[in-house]
Length: 224
Image 1 (cartoon, rainbow, N blue to C red):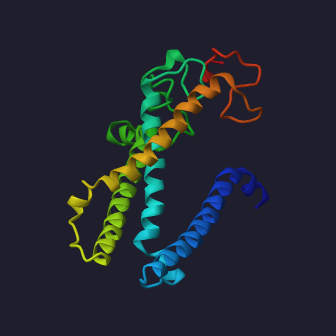
Image 2 (tube, one colour):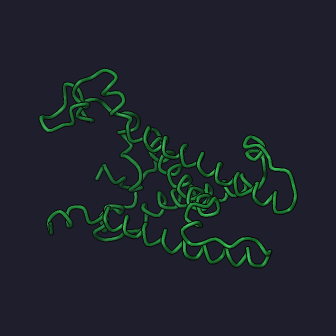
Image 3 (cartoon, rainbow, N blue to C red):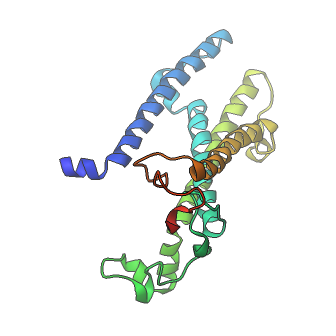
């Protein structure tokens, strides 16, 4: 058990932080929701009911979809785009999809390589792009969930003000929806862009997100 915990400590740490952050968000969001409801003489929600409310669901999905968009675009962009000297970039000579030999696939696969890396055809093509496919699928699903929960919340507010509810397609054209969406997207792209530049000049000893402390600034990580 100790060895397993050590070998999986990174994912365990971040999933634990995720649960704690979700707990904090749910409690704070529940109290904020009920304070606002009390001000407007609306119905208060129990904590359990708040957890399945559109208010909480939209807040969670709004952030999740932007995170998976960040990873999807980063995975795709780093196939073809380079940043000399950055730890977030491939070496300059590896631009593109790379050879089957370098990727250790099909006839160049090793005995312990995953089966779908060896067999060729559609299965290998799918496996060779599975990370981008799954990340993009999660982004699209969470974006859809954000739009649906936001739509429900928007119509609840419409009814509170004796206004007619709108269709989902109409909600997607509302400035409020896209303002919240782009607010998250721009922050994700800022984070990735600054990380790509910072790793050219800045170091963190012991972290795989950094080049070695003594690496020259113009040395791209995987070429060192």
